[in-house]
Image (cartoon, rainbow, N blue to C red; front, side):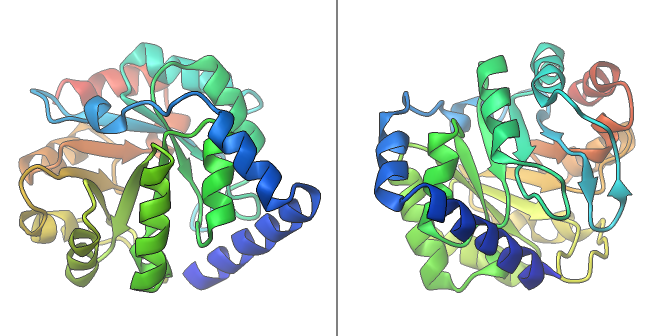
Length: 256
């Protein structure tokens, strides 16, 4: 499934490249105002930080929420205390778009993550040109050489890579990249099975000074408390926010 999702995202990017050549996109990316400092926004604090996601659907859960105005939801996230807004831009299974990202950028003043299946430089340039401050890199999807190349480009453009791991080996590969922001996803994107204890098993492998993000398997406050106790500096949450009152749910998380 992961390779299928990556292949679909790359195919869609190639189609967009036919309409907007690389050189033109690069010029647009370089002309954007400087990216916001996501590391500062997610720096460890006396409470958990939240990356709040605009998420309409997923391959494992199907349709989750009708979100005709992602910018309105993102504004709620910001007013509710989220540190970062994550915008799913994958079109086929998650029903997102770069237009969602651009709309959210105009609506909030906090950093924005482009969450997609990123595999080439064109997609990274798209993220910056659309106003993203962070870009997701999934270790399981890419060889180390490609990860390193994309990680370097993201940083050269002033953005922050969120490097996502699903195992101890992938955490080690993330550390080898020099990642300053490492996410541990409880959901295996090859099988979509959940391992709620994964973060706790691998968190100690993430060096001091690197921000640790727990992803997936966050429904209620007890899940956030479990991740916080295991050493998470932040949680990335989508489904629980789009299927409940986002402000009240955020408030309960931020009390942890």
